Image (cartoon, rainbow, N blue to C red; front, side):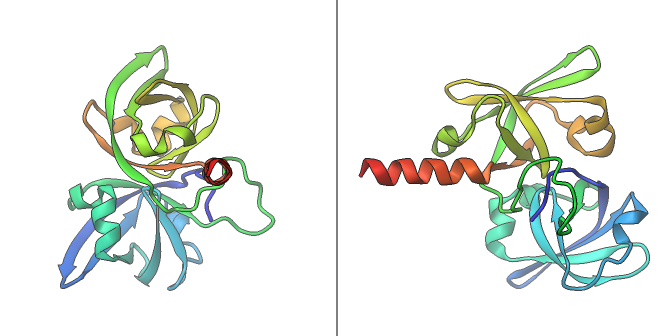
Amino acid sequence: MFSGLVQGTGKITELQKRGETIGLTLAPTNAGILTELAIGDSVAVDGTCLTVVARDQQAFRVTLMPQTFEKTTFRERHTGDLVNLERSVQVGARLEGHIVTGHVDEVTHVVERRVNENAIEVRFVLPRRLQGQVVAQGSVAINGVSLTVMAVGPDWFSVGLIPHTQTVTNLDQLQEGSLVNLETDILGKYVVANLQRGAE
């Protein structure tokens, strides 16, 4: 489980496809992410929960199954790209974002980017099947970053990126057409699922 409070970015230093397995090697820009990181630990990489399979003093390696690769923005990633990194939440730690599972719901894209003083407002396409799970002032995770939904339309939603978020994540690079990993709030999923069962 994650909180959506990204701890820094990492650069993809290697992306290998071997048969059905895709391997990524990531070099964190925040060296603290590697502290006590062990093989078998979970790390959210652009909001996707992945398992560490190897590490050294400068980088760590994860593997993706084909389904994960195809369902996320990793299918568009290249060596040198920056991704957001977050280690799993420790029991007893403050949960200051929201509950993020690291299971991406959809890849969506930016339809508008607007600078408002020192904040950046970004509007995304809201996939039809997720429309009941996104509400104004609710939470979403974009590339693993916990964000508050500013507004929701019939087929879109918007968020605001404060300066801190722009500094510590890769979201400041978003432009119209940029693809992102979207995860809706797990609590919203349960509410929608139970309402649908009740209507049957």
